[in-house]
Amino acid sequence: MSVRRLPPGSGSSYRSDRFLSFVTSHEEFKPFLEAGLGRTITQTGMRIGDHLYETPHTVSWDRVMMKLPRIMYDIVDVIEAEKKIYQ
Image (cartoon, rainbow, N blue to C red; front, side, top):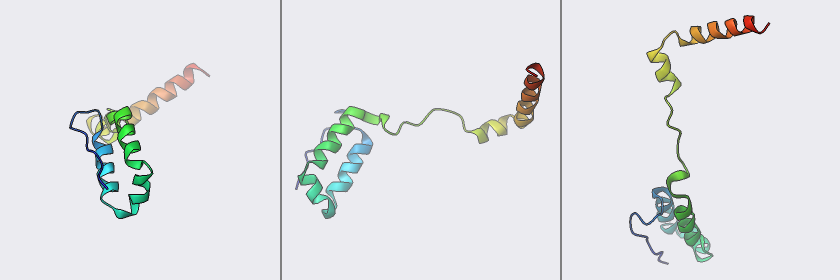
């Protein structure tokens, strides 16, 4: 069974291309590919693009603590001060 590959930049995501490559290279998936799995993977990859596994662009808490070693104490101090205001 052959699955038509899309040219690079055609809208499919890298992850969907890798997943499609995986399922087409294993005989166990043949019945599913014949039922349209390959087409579904390609269509979904084109629809979603790279947004499927997008990770947030935030700094890790470990890095924050390395840069600001007293941050935990400062947070506790602010919380305690806020408690006094609202009691």
